[in-house]
Image 1 (cartoon, rainbow, N blue to C red):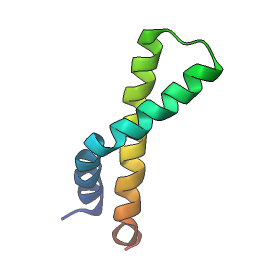
Image 2: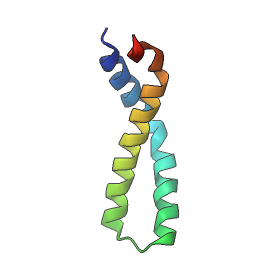
Image 3: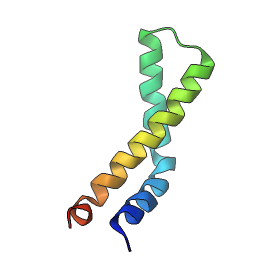
Length: 66
């Protein structure tokens, strides 16, 4: 299978596990700066996706180089 496809599959699996860290990061950021609930929700979704892709790339790093 394509390394890019394997990275995306790994990232999809990690979406559920990265939601909690994303919530904690946004909660910390909201304590430093005033955020509306809508902007907090958008940040949580974006951070969850970014963290999941980062973990997916980390898990398949050796396959991506070849």
